[in-house]
Amino acid sequence: MADAREPVVVIGLGRFGTALALELAERGHEVLAVDRSDARVQALSGQLTQVVAADSTDIDALRQLGVQDFYRAVVAIGSELEPSILTTSLLVELEIEDIWAKAVSDHHGRILRRIGAHHVVFPEHEMGERVAHLLSGQLLDYMPIDTDFALAKIRPPHSAVGVPLAESRLRSRHGVTAVAVKREDGSFTYAGQDTVLSHDDTILIVGREADIERLVTRS
Image (cartoon, helix red, strand yellow):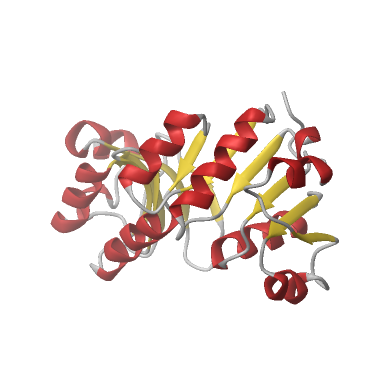
């Protein structure tokens, strides 16, 4: 198993790849950032310690960079399908053990999985889904966790205010579980069966997306 701070190769320095590489570096990871554009590489040369202009569809170029020695790699190329797919297939050939790849469509994602990507992410779709939920005005924050499952930050529904969570029956009545609560001007703490909520509290709930939507619509 890889260490949590294992070095990471990020290939493709568009908006998603750049943000990812910088965030990983900020969190203490050693990052090798690769893009075929000299301009993108030059723009990041002062922010990342290892940023290289190279053709990721050339396996010899990847070998010269030592990509085969990394445990984890991210293919952040999205708009151009052929380089995305070919780069991912070369990482599989180099026997990278943990490959993450960005997809821009379901079809693209299926191909990436078929050729060996271990994780496929849809950043634009996921962000669009999150913003759509927030624009409804009922949610304070929203994050998909898995297919049809999410974490949401909401105000407590009226039926859950003034009684212990065990008596509010959020799970049995609405199919969601309150996992944390934040008091006004306070910070989040774990919610227990004896926790009593007030109207000014903020709670984190987990559950199926449809159940969360039904709950906030009724609240």
